[in-house]
Image (tube, rainbow, N blue to C red; front, side, top):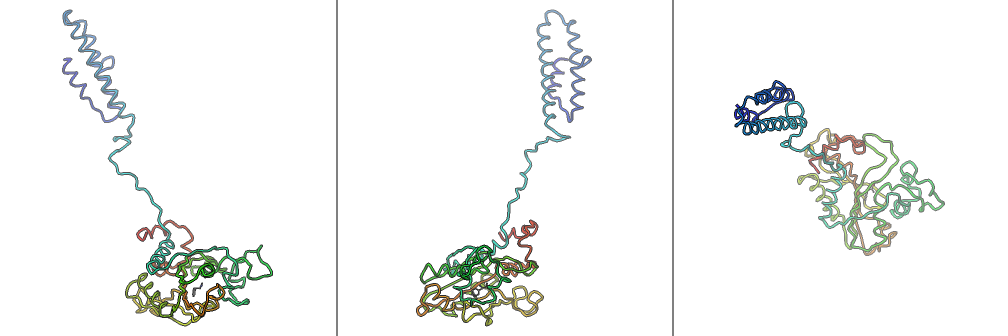
Amino acid sequence: KIEKLLDEVQNLNAHNAEEIEALRLKYLSKKGEITTLMADFRNVPAEQKKEVGMRINELKQTAIERINALKEQFETTEGDGPAMDLTRSPYPIRLGTRHPLTIVTNEIIDIFSRMGFVLADGPEVEDDLHVFTKMNFAADHPARDMQDTFFVEQSQTGDVTKNMVLRSHTSSVQARFMENSQPPIRIIAPGRVYRNEAITARAHCFFHQVEGLYVDKNVSFTDLKQVLLSFAREMFGTDTKIRLRPSYFPFTEPSAEMDISCHICGGKGCGFCKHTGWVEILGCGMVDPNVLEQCGIDSKVYSGYAFGMGVERITNLKYQVSDLRMFSENDTRFLKEFEAAN
Ligand code: PHE
């Protein structure tokens, strides 16, 4: 009997706390099987008492240990299964994603780096001298007007060139770089710029530009065109075509605006390019000799080209984002859409 019970209690099992309690009652309570066995002990012949007593104690101890072990197991569990499932895969860790403007800026930098351009940088709070004067803006040029440019109030002086502004384009980096170096110069200047415009789907009070500048002997408009064509093809696909339209900037002469064949419809015409087959992406031109001279470079020896593009514009075209405000709202649902492009 003892041997049979011992075998039983060694293999006890339960699925919940009630079942454990039932086992405890069955074996260890006042009327439990083991307790009853112990009550019968006095009927055991004297010569067997020692042996049987040891066996019963062993049985009781085993039952207690087994039931306690079952209890312990269920104390750390919930319902029917263990609370901690060690076979479960870890929670997915949410990684941040790069901002679409960062992704596109990096891509632009990458493309021009491969063509030999190096990075240049300058301050966002800049003086008029570098934003306008050295860039050949006439003293009464409308871009100097309060309506376009944010002025830093405390710094307005009698000398217009000392006025501090939030730079309205990254061309100021051209001026700073040329002041401090001699050709050959081949730089790319990415950065944030500010303009006093009402915030709408199509305009913002700040946006991002990448500007390029190349100054050397015998730099020609053909060089400019080829570099821009290579860029357009790398950015928007190898069958992209470009088109240059005459334009005007104070710091370039001649100046042009560049369109690319619409990469959505392949130039056939769609709602995206307003059925013209072309979309504008940047301004460019040959550096005006006045700019070179103002920055300490001999315009009789050197010539150069410059171009500047809005990163938001490139991103809008590339990823078909229609509302500029999305870029600064930090809506993670929008940002997560660029996960694959990271
Ligand atoms: N600075 C011009 C702008 O902000 C862009 C540009 C740069 C045009 C260089 C020509 C050459 O619109």
